[in-house]
View 1: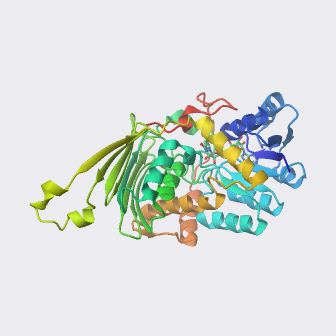
View 2: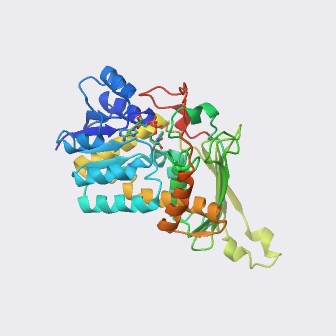
View 3: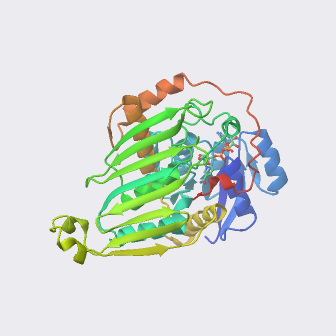
Length: 395
Ligand SMILES: NC(=O)c1ccc[n+]([C@@H]2O[C@H](COP(=O)([O-])OP(=O)(O)OC[C@H]3O[C@@H](n4cnc5c(N)ncnc54)[C@H](O)[C@@H]3O)[C@@H](O)[C@H]2O)c1
């Protein structure tokens, strides 16, 4: 095989951008041959902008044909595992958008289907190619800051106005989306944390629902992570704080990193804190030295980051290149998100992985009371086929 023939399910904001990247020849070895959407307007857009590309209304019809080798899933989140499982059954390679799904229980089934098929399975965790996060991960893995004892991430600059929430019927409803800022904006941040530090054992969550917007899901969250080795983490996010901020601190026994404004400021200790704590007071002044370092690894604008993941996924099919973001990793973030929700609903600390049946029952209670949204208004901040600056990491 020297070319991968792609189909895309869902050509809304994100799917249409992936479609244009491929259609315009920006991903080498990839050919866009089919797209699918249930929305008539998207069909018109595709006919106008993706000439020669087949259009399908039903994803099963597209996945059943022998037109394609790989599918990108860019529908609302609930559908990701359903469509992926069907695609694996047809022997297709799958790249799913984030989050991997809404319920860890179904994402588990998607992973099993992927394994059974033996096909390439990726997830669009485009922040993993961000040089700042890559450098920070490298520093942690090199042991330079010792054992991590704490992280604090205040990521409150996901600001959204009511217009955004009104732009699609599925958004910000339990029934259509299965959550708010945690499941829509934060899957990238939560993935980055577990990619750098590993999975927490327990989470404790405090969510505010419709605190800043007229929505039924959470738009403000404070969560505590607990790791196996006793390390802790505080994660604070919001779509209602303006101006919000983006500040990540990771402290270890031998140093500390502060990620802010696209830079990493480091303070390193010549004596690990675990030894220093037992020195007498007199020894302190002579022995302890702090070293300050600064890294500016550069930026990777969001549009480019998506293309890098598309290229890597295509290469993986063609040449076996290692995936930057394997689809199997998606379950980790979904477990953390389910855990934070469950913790808030039950008002107790939650062990991970979550109990899928308990989560499902409590989510279904919310879905049963979910209100259908009507009269959606057009979101003018987005143009089909173009990466939006609202997807960028804002420092
Ligand atoms: N990686 C990123 O940076 C990033 C950025 C934005 C969105 N996303 C993800 O992409 C997904 C889509 O988000 P969006 O903003 O593009 O939403 P959107 O509403 O603009 O697009 C979703 C599209 O899916 C279509 N659709 C719904 N059900 C379908 C079905 N059964 N078959 C075929 N098409 C169907 C809708 O008609 C719509 O056109 C979400 O999961 C979101 O989290 C990822």
